[in-house]
Image (cartoon, rainbow, N blue to C red; front, top):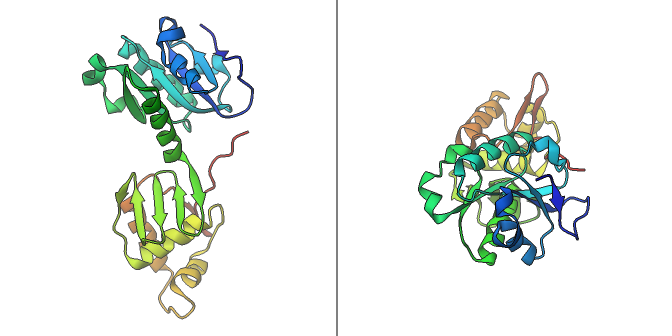
Length: 237
């Protein structure tokens, strides 16, 4: 089965991709549930190649409808994950298959079928929020990393992370000024203050500590001879 879209589909971003065996399409599958919720759905078969679907710039989330063949679904997930690394992916599997789910398959979350329409919608929205980014006076969010300024709290994947005062200040500054390159001297002045008389190595030490505590979600770039930059999210067409 090639890529097909509902009658209300358009070429704009915001569609949901459902990857399922053709026998799961129609009234019984995830696609039908999502359409009942008013979603614009693109369907592709478990055996489709990601490049065949031409949806890289239009999809906001993907659901793999495993049916009775979790092995086929896992293989499809690996293919589509490689082609669509920025798209959150939900594995939908019958309750009987839950014991065979392995996190190494690469899904962001899973849901047991059958399930209420509202639960499926909530799981997809949670994945979208998890990948979202925003910044305002009280909160800054970059993927799973959130700074709650009112509570002076940093959370990663919903868990509070203990930071020192200067680690917190440096993280807040870098997340607030995404995309801008700052020298070590500039960071010392902006975060530690003009009166700080320590050396620039202090910045390197704090960056190293943040990387150790936050891991991959803190995707800070080191620009040799220039300083540090937290890159902007990839733009979508």
